[in-house]
Length: 200
Length: 200
DNA sequence: CTTAAATTATACCGTTAGGTACAATATGTC
DNA sequence: GACATATTGTACCTAACGGTATAATTTAAG
Image 1 (cartoon, protein in one colour):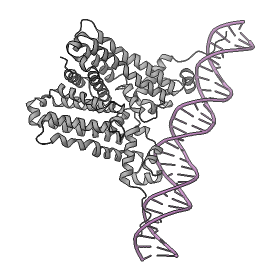
Image 2 (cartoon, helix red, strand yellow):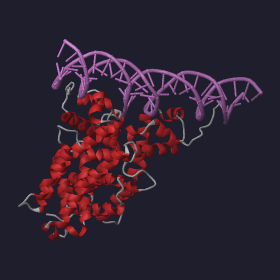
Image 3 (cartoon, chains in turn purple, red, green, cyan):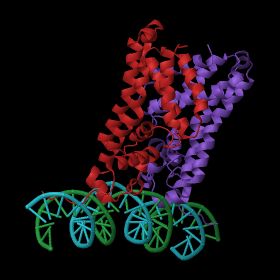
Image 4 (spheres, helix red, strand yellow):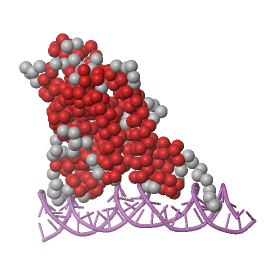
């Protein structure tokens, strides 16, 4: 079997570059020129490797979920660690990503979810974005409902409300990080939220 | 002096319609077609009355600040009302606007500020957006530093942190409202934040 | 009724959007 | 080296973008 010319770019690396463009500019704001420039490839290469803009966006979103959402979850079940510390570590780990200066500030999902209401994001991508937001919520709900320490603190009695409080805070910090607020300032916000739901 | 044909549209009403388009779609996402359709006028009328897209956006932002930001401030100084109640009224008043179903869900400023980092918003408009966000922050800072009850509660000792906590929560609720979370659920988030900073 | 001023509608401008056809260029197999 | 295959670079497509020139309207003043 004959097999033609080799790809001159690393697909994973190109996808990572695309993710950063969407992360910085959103779905609508990211033009194909922005994307191809950052990815270091031209349009035919992009379309043959990733399909089209929407398919590329979904793949970039999946990469973001894996590399910037799920990675933080493991500290929630760190053994021999008080719940208060685990929750704080989790939130600060996310905020560190939001404030990381080597990446676009803020949160990919928060930015792109805010675009969905305008109707300029294809429906499949919009649905995918919405589902992505549920991942941390479900995990936090499980913690509040099942963790022995959480039950002792009666956090299970309004688990949904407590999850929403944390999630709202983290969404807010994403906007704060995007506009340049420092992680040291946001740590106080986290402490405030945790104290507010009755922890510590 | 001769004076020509009369305007067939109400300028205030057209500006209000433009504000809602930006509120829903952001600066980049709002096309001139979106704008002229919602405003009920055509492009030459838009340009003669408002200048260009950027000038229209700045006027729409000013209208939003007057009609959806400053209006909430007065409850912060309501006489014969405990500080806890005033702060809660203030936050819930804002969230009611964010959840109002007769308007686009969420916050005009939060949406458009998130676009600025991408570089697709003209610089003058971007600066104006940033300044707009300072209005509530400055007022809250004054409350925490000067209100007798706030001083008694020692909220003045970390006024900036407490302001950031409230502001982050309200920014978060704007995103929550945009994705359809009900005001009744967000009330618990407000209670959490206020309890967190040591009120109530 | 004429005239000057202002607003309207229509048609158009150059540019950029997302997307693709096609020829040129590499690669592995025979 | 010839050939099939896959990727690349270039050029192009239609549609929509922000913005405008121009001519057709409507109004008030003289």
